[in-house]
Image (cartoon, rainbow, N blue to C red; front, side, top):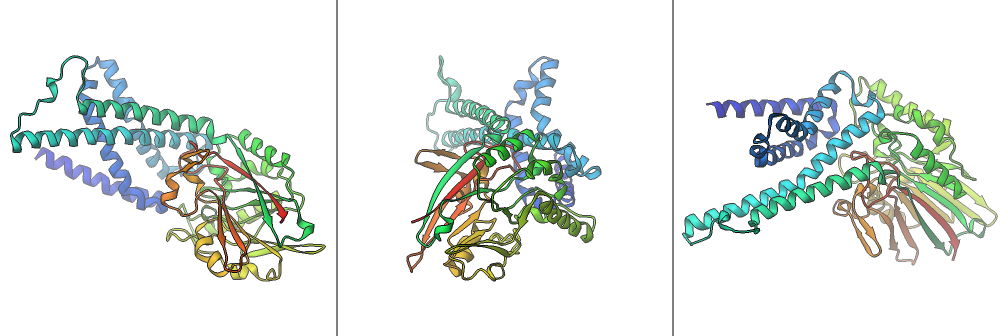
Length: 448
């Protein structure tokens, strides 16, 4: 009866937790089952060594127990606190590093949980082997000397791997999140008008100002961009995480970005305010008005399904911007490329700003073979992966066909279309990076 009562209480808490998440973070409610599985794994991990903890002296026992469950307590406390004060209104540094600590702790626990599960599966097979086949199998505790059983090895390997994961993610949050890397690309176009030869364009993407704990790193990024003396700067969306006022503390910094012929931007999925619950439709509309006004104040031209044509002495170059268009169902499809191209049809070179790279694969190369280069972002390169010499890997590649760097698509008429996916300047979710560093991209256009 006692166990049935525990099960009912657990199920009640799970259902209650779902409605809390649905109320506070409606766009993330679909991830709630994953959270439940994660917490179940957390308890499973705890059960594997709680007897060892309880064998310690009282003070150490409480310290170890509290340390283990601290991330869970912080998660529950911050969720409940969000009822009274929405997390978007918290101190930005506190919010960023609080949720970052919770994330890296649970991410680090996943590895030992997997190893522990493998150890238990192995023990289960051994038990099945002894009971069913009745073979003379040595018990695990029959090992002598310094030898350890396979189960013990898996447990220890899991703990070591989890510790390394925690250390790496912690370092990624404190150091690599702002270790800006400049990627340089020379783009040769045979039809580039001579008047645009040696054109220098900087692309940045996914700043996510709601995740910046302090301003000095952004100041450094702006200074490094200005030192490259670009003719044009392109920003390909996701200025904020949830709402426009996240950008206000950084307005003076972004206003210092300089480009000889202007700064152009487009919207990303996070810029529409879809990831929070607004008190009214009017409040959400005001949030978008605030965003448009912000872009005007910092001197960036927002291209919402429109274009800017530059006329040289021997030809034209068009900068085209579409609103967000994502192939995945939960991302908005506001982009209208036909509308964006109006008036730029006869440009010799067409450069497109489109936040989500799936737009290139599904729309651009299918319907617009004369667009030379599409600039995208969105994926962040998953903020985690490996990029050394000829090795390029990230979990992002299992979600997105195009996730980081340059991609080519030769047309039937011999014209080469390009897509460049920027790895992003900021972070979302996990406020750090491991292996995939924040990116500033320099393009130099050359007449072939």
